[in-house]
Length: 223
Image 1 (spheres, helix red, strand yellow):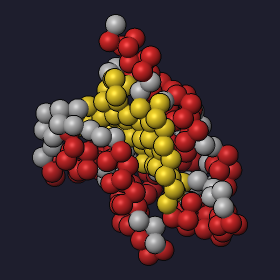
Image 2 (tube, rainbow, N blue to C red):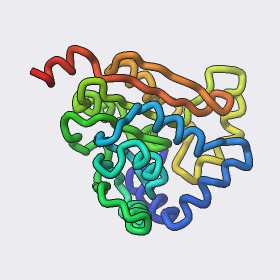
Image 3 (cartoon, rainbow, N blue to C red):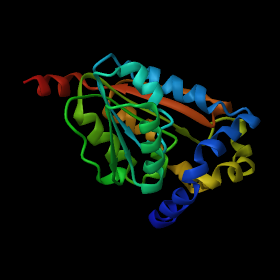
């Protein structure tokens, strides 16, 4: 498992070429863009909504989120790595978006704004040791009917799990190690949110988990 400082150094080194290297996974059938689009769709965002992205990196999801919330909505991108956020800022300036706020912060220490309409994390949350606490605090910050969506890697619960060690070198450049398979963010989604769903992709190595703010919590927020 990589330490915090090792992960920070790793993503600083990869920031400039992150988007390019991520696209290389299509060569082995890993349809990353499809998974990102499916995850964003699971948020069920509407124009004018506010969404927080945990581990936004270079902003690969920003266009997808912009298409949902529109110019009157707001996107908050959170990432611990300054170099990744610098790439994200370049993307924002190039596209002329005026409704995206970037926050440099460890996910485990981030304080969510209240009554947000959605939270998303794609291929990042498993790297966060405090992932369960992040999901819990995020769930408490959601507005009524707000949704939490996580897309990430996992150990398959089928025969393909025996391929995991062979595939691991493919993902290690992004900080993925075998011991991360003990982290199960999808279980935290089910623990802290209602109407939780999990869909698996890529032979079970990838999943998208989604849940909705709990009714009791929503009533308390309205009160």
